[in-house]
Length: 244
Ligand code: MN
Image (cartoon, rainbow, N blue to C red; front, side, top):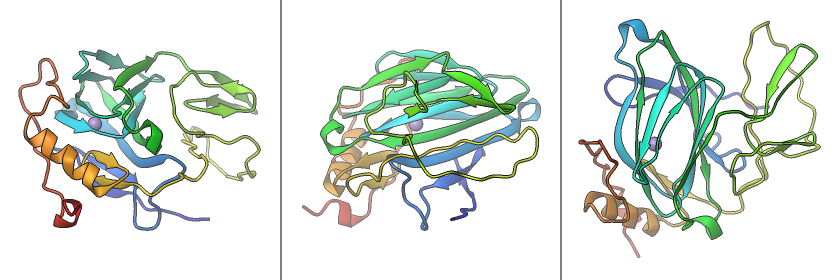
């Protein structure tokens, strides 16, 4: 059993999130390589979350909305609102850019995770999928929603590239107070070591350095996000990333 304390991370414009992955103690859980807990934030005296255009590579961003609404726009031209209970899944593949803006409301509460792409899918075409409904059932007074993968003969429609929830896993015993919400993630150990820098994931450091250069030089690997006027600059990777 391992307990990981959330660390505070800044998303920009004073919006902080609790980050559970990656940490020194645990880099990944299966293909899941990043887990941010957003909120809950009272939006009545807060500007909300506004993340300007930024790129991703070799991963999927997985946004599960609990309260409030976030508008997603990306360089494919997608524009999609994600509402409570729904999932937005963006497959970066070889490269994509997006913006995320919370809409005015009472509260904002969500989880955003990244799923690393296995090496053979690293260069897959970028894609965006919205899942307005996911399989739901209830058992022993517990409401269950399957966000991805398979669980007990239920299959989620979510487009994923790795086994994320394994059948026949060990039992998990938890004592929870009423109204508790749990996000259970799993998956087969990721077959290779990945590198991460800023918003880039890659299987080699050179790949990430190239992605950094492509973003900074406005390469057509990352087309503009319609309607976005500001591009977030990437901090330069350490010198060891450029060694070839
Ligand atoms: Mn993003």
